[in-house]
Image (cartoon, rainbow, N blue to C red; front, side, top):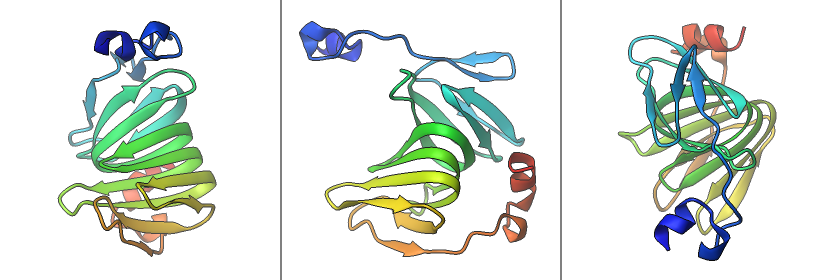
Amino acid sequence: MLVGNLFGFTWAGGDGYRTHSSGFVGAVEYKRGQTIDSGDSFLLLQFCDALIYFDVSTHVTLVDGRQDRCAINVAQGRIIVKGKIEIQTRNIAAHINGTSSFVHYSWLDDIEVATISGSLLIDVPGRHQLNLESDAVKLHTLAPYTQEKISFNPATSAAADFYKFSLP
């Protein structure tokens, strides 16, 4: 039953098996479940309908590559997303459709999310959905899920070089 559900078989409660897209960093292919580590350089990942720019020391896992459910998990680091994708981290899910900055400070259990263009919807477990259209927020990823508005200016950020790379 568990294997059937993993592959989406209807007899196991799924909606039918659909293939998962692979992600590509240049010519290197990554499949669902694999982790991409940027190390000491910036990277560009093409996955589903999104371009995902990695800052240094960023770790991302490809969670779901089905066309209507594309998702990644940001274990730690900073990314810029251009396109449509879900970002998962701990108990928070961010649904991006446009261009957004996403930073996960894993050692602090915090994320910082900023909408640059388009829409961004954040699911906070058991509480609410936070809709960001032009705001930036800092959220704690564990209960009690505190949040605060923050300022976001890529040009004056400590990661200004990364933002120049990802937001030309």
